[in-house]
Image 1: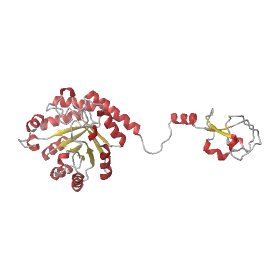
Image 2 (image 1 turned 90 degrees about the vertical axis):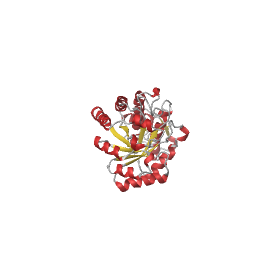
Image 3 (image 1 turned 60 degrees about the vertical axis):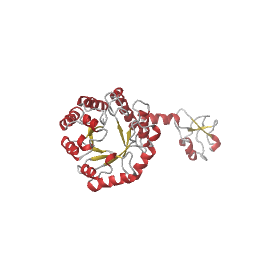
Image 4 (image 1 turned 180 degrees about the vertical axis):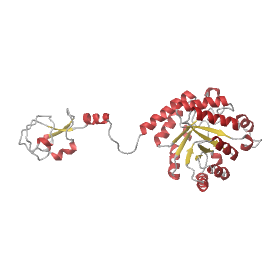
Length: 322
C-alpha cells in the first residue's frame, strides 16, 4: 500500500481489507522513521513526518492482518535498522529493500541478518549495483532473493517499461523476477501490462492499492481502488490457471471427446471386395462416424488382403485384413 494510508490507520485498514478480500498473497507495509530517512532540509521531510506511523500503530495493523486475513503475508519495505528491529518484533514474513538502498551494504547486511526473504527492488539501478547488492546478501545469509523490476516514474509511460529487459535480468541473475507495475491506475494498461508480464513468465506481481484514487492522495497515481484490485487479482489467478504446466499431461474428458470427433480415420475410397489387396489408392483420410486407424498408420494396411467386403466410406481396420 506504500503510503496511500496518508498517515491514517483507518485508511490503512481499508487498504488491508481491499487486499485481503481480493485474495492477494501479501500486503506490503512501508515502514520508516522520518528523522532516520531524510535530512530536515529534504523537500519531502515534512511530508514524511505526516506519513510516519508509530511502532504501536504498525503493531496494531500487523495484528489486524493476522486476525482477519491469516493467509495474507506481511512484507515490510524498510529504510533503516530501527525499522527492521520493529518488523522483527511484529513478525513480518519478508522484507523489501528499496532500490535507493542497493548501494547501502550496511542496511542490506542488517536485513539479510534476519534470514527472511528479501524482495530486492532494482529500478534505476545498474547491473554493477544489482550484482554488488546480491553478493552482499549472499555473503551475509542464506536469505531467499526475489528481484523486483519497475520503473520509478509515477505513472510510468508504456514505452519506458521494457519488459524484455526485466526478463533478461532474470536470466542474468538466475533469480525469481517480479514486476512492479507503476502504469497509470486509471488506464487499461494497469491491467494488460501486468497480464503481459505474467504471460512472459514473471514470477511475482507487485501492484499498488489505495482507498480512493479519485482523491489524488499520496501514492495514488499507479494505484487501484479496492474494487479494481479485486478484479485485478481475479485476472491474475485466471492467468495463472491458463498458464498451467509445461510438460505433457493426461487428456481431459473433453479433449478425448474432441479427439474422437476431429481425428481423421482411414476409410475406403470405393466398394472393396474380400480377397482385394489393399493399396494406397483404396484409402481416404476423412472424418468418420467413429475413430479408426489414423492416416499415419496406413502402413499397417497397405499390401494386406481383405477378408470381408468393405463399402465405400467404411472404416478399414486391421481386423478386416488377413
